[in-house]
Image (cartoon, rainbow, N blue to C red):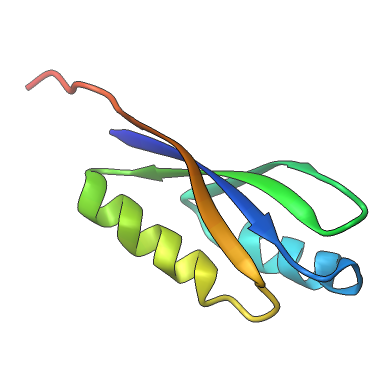
Length: 79
């Protein structure tokens, strides 16, 4: 499993809408937000391809100004 830390930015007046949109994504967790429109989100994925697809999905959400990968970790899986 891969875990990515993402910093998401939006205009402050769109925080509530974007928070609701992120809550609908079962693979994303919002951990922290500021009143000026910054959020820290983690993404869980099976591999790096899926991680990047999910980051792209966040970037395409309405009201997102930017979403930047801040940290990426690939965890070994036992088979």
